[in-house]
Length: 423
Image (cartoon, rainbow, N blue to C red):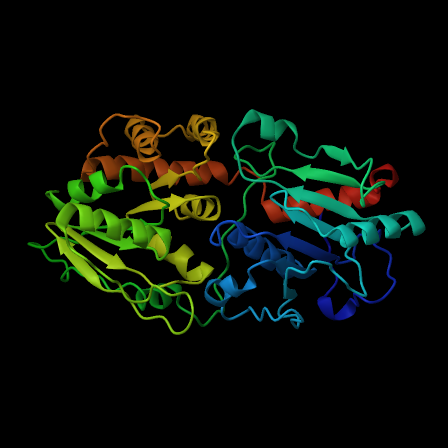
């Protein structure tokens, strides 16, 4: 089904226009509980912007909107009564959502519980005006497990509680053409901007300029939780025969790296630019053998996407950075979000089963995630080159999976168009 969207200037979200009109751009309410500010909020912010670029109006409700101060400083004004910027307004998560205009589409990100009064208002709207459909969708976590794909697009009728009478629909992102697909990278902020120049101001390479006698270092990005093998990796790279530049993301990755450095070399470090508030300055550098470490300040999403695209090897974590590492067409090592009950193990195995990646890379990921007691494979240029060739093929293959935002809009159109699916 092709999308044909009205210009935003022709749409009034306060008017009583017919949501069944296929040309209508809807009002979307996206709810996000921040568990890990980079991942949960990162996905919801990227989705909100993509919806706005399609012409929709988005209200993003977040329990920690202050994190957008660094993730999207040029867009965010999270003051609880935010004006709409480029189709997106940001609001602090309220105990009760009150709005003169109810949304046509409600996104419950990652199973967060919506305010009861808000659900009651939706149910009241559905029962009092049955001609006005409401699409309530649970946007789930990204997973390669078959179980998740089996419930994609499945309905969940609400038989009790404040939402009684409504239907919630499950939407499952994934890595196959049959799944809900993957988000795509942000476009450049403006035609005049040079993304590579933008990122370079945050990434001052510690090594000297490459020459015949001093080749360019292997450039890595480290964005992780607390991988068990990080200490082993740092020691391995410090003793490597090649120069390595490791650019460490702020937050948990920086803190864990500092702990490993203290254990390995008894060297206390306090990098600059650690705080996500205020003006950021590049962090300090450290050198251990052939390993150069650069501690990065917080970056917005577009800058971080570009950083991944410039790297030789990306260590990423969670969901949003994994997807962007795929589109970067660079080798990546993924750390899945660790769960106390061990549920992350089968999730990682399912993901590895979809990769068709070199054996050395799959082995590296299992050790990196603490799911194997084997020794961490030693990085070398030949191995990274093999991974690079694979990453380009994998990114091309992933182009065949749906564009998540566009597919989500099409799914919503189908819900709106089917009377039996409305509530």
